[in-house]
Length: 133
Image 1 (cartoon, rainbow, N blue to C red):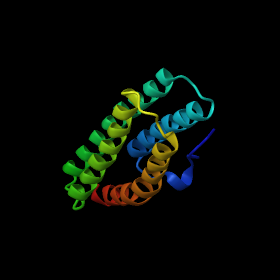
Image 2 (tube, rainbow, N blue to C red):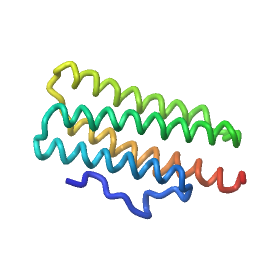
Image 3 (cartoon, helix red, strand yellow):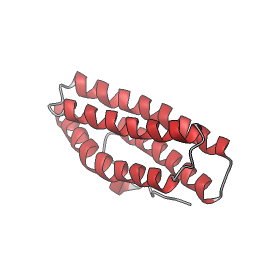
């Protein structure tokens, strides 16, 4: 199951950011596939852990770029990263503790992140970086 299709529409124009986004979308789709095909809890937990690790790496790259180029919306953008990561970590902790997971809820959060954060906030950051040199 491909929950999110990655294509030109989602690209920001910044190769580093786009590479990270594409990796994260691949993991979201692996998670959706695991949910749909009822793969083991261990499989889903491992994919979630990979997603968290890749998200942290990706956000670190973006935040360094914002600092380096003095992005005027860095504070708001970083706060968005923190909220998103908190939501994912809360879900993962609950899932790992044995709670009955509603993966559809998580997938909606992830889809919203792609459509709001990448399509709006990250594209704005990429445009700024392109003009900042």
